[in-house]
Length: 316
Image 1 (cartoon, helix red, strand yellow):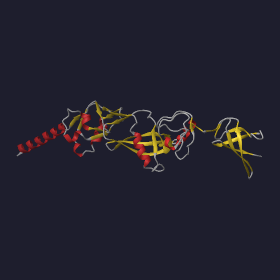
Image 2 (cartoon, helix red, strand yellow):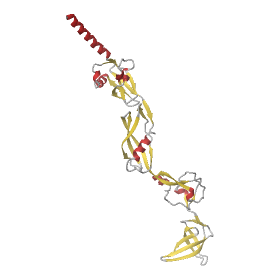
Image 3 (tube, one colour):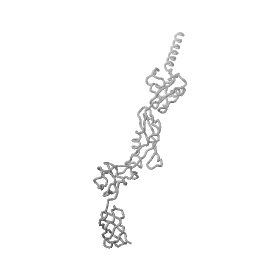
Image 4 (cartoon, rainbow, N blue to C red):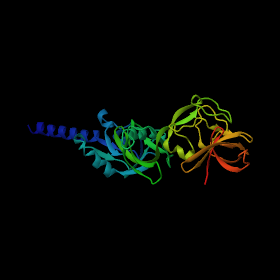
């Protein structure tokens, strides 16, 4: 009986030692990860005899992509305590393990679409056509490997017209890895006049020569002309290519009369109006004031041209 009891105790002790030996893990001196979490399999390498379910267990938060961080063996041991079936694991290795997170680079071109979707669904831009242009990132982003998504957490104006700073959370496999500020211009769009075909210098504008295109509302600062403004009858100062926006500095008033033409002049003095004919002493465009002469009296006076061979003079 005593011999049997001793054998049972010896067997239990041997099983206990085998169990401990089975869960005795040696940490690598350095490891690499590609995700937001450092996995147990990455810390112990391929040579460790691990149950398959253990190898993919997250242990620690990975360092920022492209950076390295050291984790003390005590820190790793404490992190493993969240798994009940690993309470008997014994760790071996150096005092710390150096972990490097490798990831993919992103230059920011993907961010404009995310911000545009946010803007078009958020007041005060909702329902208004807008143009979003992101400023280049000061430093390229390096992200862990995994399913990437973005979420706009907020924004504020930067003080410049149409300029905002958006705060984007970068998520990998549904977990936020970091928040990045992205500056972008948000410009409401409106229809402006553009050339419907190549237009020559001196050509007189007509509705069939123009079409419209959505461009930033602030484009008025660049001289673009809104499509609700009547430009028929104006002349081009320069050649305009197909699809090129019509700019204010490229337009001029048409020639109303040339030197020697007879101009129909309306002379106004209070409620009194007199229509008379005068001879133009110079050529001019609508809005110009040119010298004209009454051929009967030989009197000369300034006439403001208001249309084709017509003008207005105020009499005192």
